[in-house]
Length: 368
Ligand SMILES: Cc1cc2nc3c(=O)[nH]c(=O)nc-3n(C[C@H](O)[C@H](O)[C@H](O)COP(=O)(O)O)c2cc1C
Image (cartoon, rainbow, N blue to C red; front, side, top):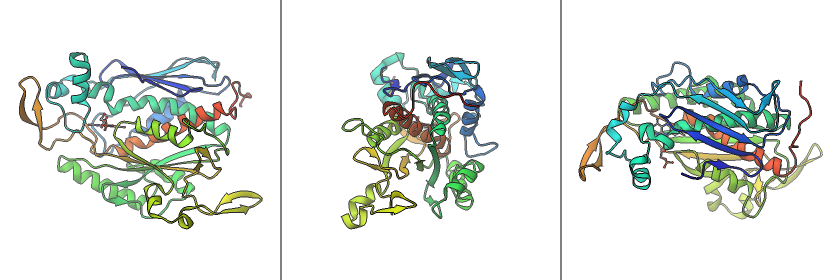
């Protein structure tokens, strides 16, 4: 199974399976001199699970991170950083059912055909959403690193089921409210409705999807390497590597196809001596380069495939049609857990590109 690493100068390698011993990340290329402790990573990991909420699975996954390498006296050394969490809440028998009966919408069937009986199907194995714990661990390193250069990446839910965010949130609302709500939405009223939608789907043995928006502010102009390593292309690739992501759009996105040039172009202006655009339909990227405006990307997440409603499938051992009712501890909506994953994914790509552009040096100045 190849394809476990991403990045050119800041290379992330993810390892582990849902029901294996651990899930972890190796971060290779982090500059020396970044103040980093397990606390920094733990803080981000804790964002995966809202406290006491019915909208996430019974698998509480209180993951405790261990940094195995790459730091000394509280600072990164420039050597690969290996961070992992041990899988503790493992109940493989929950997955006996899917051994020969692939879940519709999950990776079970193509993985079984490709890897045969070697495929670790328990909990989806390598195809489980749990592997994104590694994205968050790597993303925690990026968050600290990017903040030294003034870059802030924030993700939040804007749509769940048919409930949309009522009003465009300010940066302040996003910072203050997102993690106050179980659904990770910065508008408290919309968050309540979203939560109800998830609970209704759960009661029906079903699931719902949604949309996560992510902004990155203060990205210097010119980040990105056209042609084939354009910033938008690399961000989109990374986002499509997050399981359950089915669509990615920047700025006006698909709406741009229905606008006239005069409506879609972002006119330039000077504001406090700085060149800005009056709108941001480009989503902060032009020609594959950051434009200086906030990067704005939206990600469509499909409804959780594992649902307890009856669905048609096949029994591969008998080669006959059958019905499946998926058991196990599944989230009726992936969006809340995906929010910190999307944020990490965007931060990982930005860090790689800022290192490639020489904006982030290989050795940092000592921080307090
Ligand atoms: C954070 C996160 C949590 C997920 N949790 C579940 C889950 O509980 N049950 C499930 O069936 N799928 C879950 N998924 C989605 C599956 O991993 C994904 O749908 C599957 O691997 C097939 O890949 P695809 O949807 O990208 O085609 C989760 C995904 C993410 C990102």
